[in-house]
Image 1 (cartoon, each protein chain N blue to C red):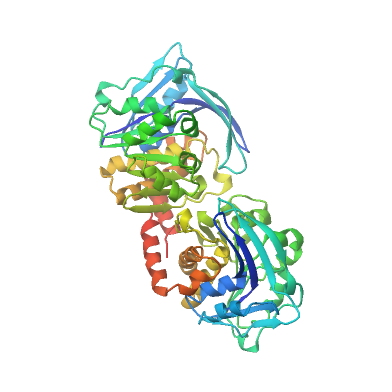
Image 2: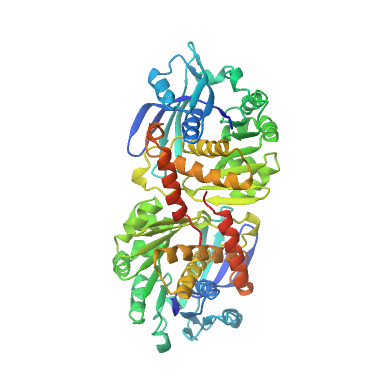
Length: 304
Length: 304
């Protein structure tokens, strides 16, 4: 099935306990697309400014499964930029700066050829913008959104309206807690189901993820990675979402069992993303490595 | 195989966000034994004071699989008492008071009839006391210990000596971090393997557990429980250890696959323990409920 992602392209500055990198090719849509393209073709809708490095364009272009027809460039605008610092506890990070740039302008146009997209992932941005995208995909069969604490605090009515119109929500545990006032991931997820979505995936970083669905729940640990192999956690959540949606698009089904399997693909793809800065690991990743690690993970996470 | 546990019997005061209970029957050995006895007979070595309530004796006696021949009572001493308060985040608790009482005296005697015990679980106490127990079980085939931050800080040489003599260690993630100076559970576990044990289980509370073994690693999420069903988290870790060791004793094998299966049993038994104060849920638990929840858990935690 045809998959499209809307979201940000960014120029990241990433500081980890071991290294610092500037001018890293990032953004939620970039991470998502790079990850999803490991499993199926994906269409990208995003906007960059005139300062967007040609090298970053080459990086995105190197993913043969990513369609860039929906990538808009505005010469007189500046690309979204983000700087963050990770602590020894890689589950914790601090945002050093955010320059929204072109993101405060009109959202990117959706190419006419994308109108037949069936799976839509609305990467994190203002919920009104996310809402505006939905109707531009009249053939949509599954709409899944991400959001963040900022919108929970400052755009709650718009977020509520969005939740009424999506099939799935993928959020962090802290965001699920903030959205519902409930800390426990399962309890928070159940509360979110009452707000509209048919399913919720609560991501817990290095502790895995939980799927909450009217038919039941599913839990998955993260793929265990030693400290030394965690090079850059940026975009791991977006890579999870990309692997998750990429699997669903390749399967063409969204029943509970498929969603549960999609969590495994999301987890494995995300585990590779951490191994290098930006999209570097995704560029060299082979499908064979994914299936091999998935088989290894199945052994490691076998219950009884 | 014959299983023995050494550890504490305590009178607990437990405060949760929703309730407060005094005079709760607790202690690491009690929780362990109650949990292990769901899967196989278990021998208890512990000591109480003259103030130990007859009612608590009846509670322990009600577990037909628990042998109390090694439970020593000292009339003129006081039973170990512990008071703790849980926060909304049930992974966090504060100790309100600890009255060591009889624990500061001589350790309990091991009955001669226990000398043929093959699986030995050394519940948390001073590592010198734990060391003293080991040689009293000359038929031991598997010795597993628990420890805590206090001994890591105040009895490090004794703890190092203990680690040289045990086959396995079961610790919390925070303790594994303190013991090794490494936060990442897998990395910390690998470091602990270099200190002596053949395997390490790092418990992460509501986030599950990780097994680190020379043959590989295994990860398991916690059984997902809604907030409303978490009545009392006290003893969940000891119940996990009890289910873990009880399964190994019932199987009579300690290879990697058995250890991995034991993690599933430990997880499921612990998930019941949380559902009531003290040992209340363990008293009514049926083996049938364990196998049913295990099957449910296997579905929920299926990877791909």
